[in-house]
Length: 164
Image 1: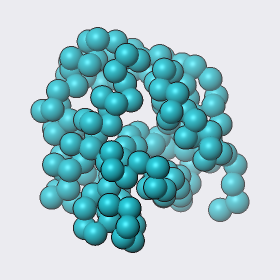
Image 2 (image 1 turned 180 degrees about the vertical axis):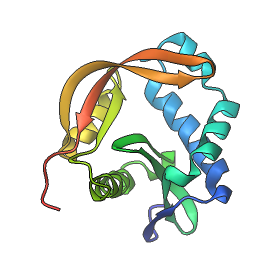
Image 3 (image 1 turned 30 degrees about the vertical axis):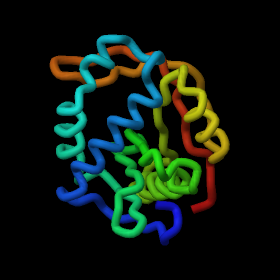
Image 4 (image 1 turned 90 degrees about the vertical axis):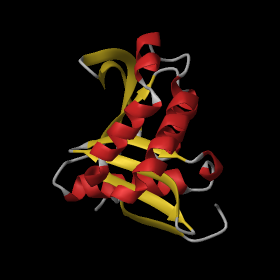
């Protein structure tokens, strides 16, 4: 996927299957061993499919050669989800999606964007630090599940002050 031009665009309903697959694979890669067992059990393939379909309007996809390489979801001032296809990791797709999400959050009137990273997800924490994001420290994030939330130990990152 890394050989062709990267394009960012709003997600469409036809992207939902790719988004769900990428999200589930990436979520498992990043979260197993770092979140409560109950959350892992709740994150079924069907749950990702339903959540992906329900979040299309707030999702931006990165494509290469018309294939979805990754996506980012934005909820108000939060970069809610950012995941890449395994084949697209390390090729600048994540930085492009994060930058676009930050631009959209700022353009909508917020002073900065923020996101939550599971405390044990050291690779993601390093990625956000390399992008200049600031680790505001640990907090407990309520991960939504059917019928409620499950508390997850996370770190809250926020975008740096930039000239826009």
